[in-house]
Image (tube, rainbow, N blue to C red; front, side):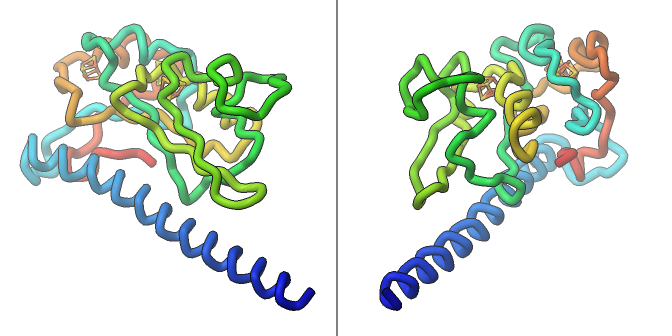
Length: 188
Ligand code: SF4
Ligand code: SF4
Ligand code: SF4
């Protein structure tokens, strides 16, 4: 019995270490936004780029349809440090799904951009394939309704054309788009 308890404690410690590692990965993702932006625009803090504030976003879906680019320059970013690693993930599964399996019919994402990986009972990791993401905000909505809001939308500066007038900003019903310094291009 003691052996089992020790093993569980070790598994838990490994999970927490892994979580910290993933937390670092999300910081690296934010760093990636910074590096891409600074490589493109230099370190001039006066230079502004478009970004959206996840606190204001009402997940209306227009980010996917009104960007001048197809697919949109807006993508889902996973803030791992805030994720609960839930078995029943509101950002991954269709609401009311009976089977918690990776079958396409159970997934909320229309492009299967979210990967679900088993860690240890009852924890799963969710990662976004940005190449497949169209920025539709469905997962962001699901995660904010039933989870920790760890899935958020962000303008990806490796794609964004930094249009003088951002087409999404013009049609965003929540006025969530704003200009931020290219030296600090993320709002997560
Ligand atoms: S258009 Fe605005 S409210 Fe709609 S998903 Fe984009 S940022 Fe959110
Ligand atoms: S549900 Fe939409 S925003 Fe979320 S990962 Fe899939 S395509 Fe991207
Ligand atoms: S600035 Fe242009 S490319 Fe960038 S998000 Fe807005 S519409 Fe899309």
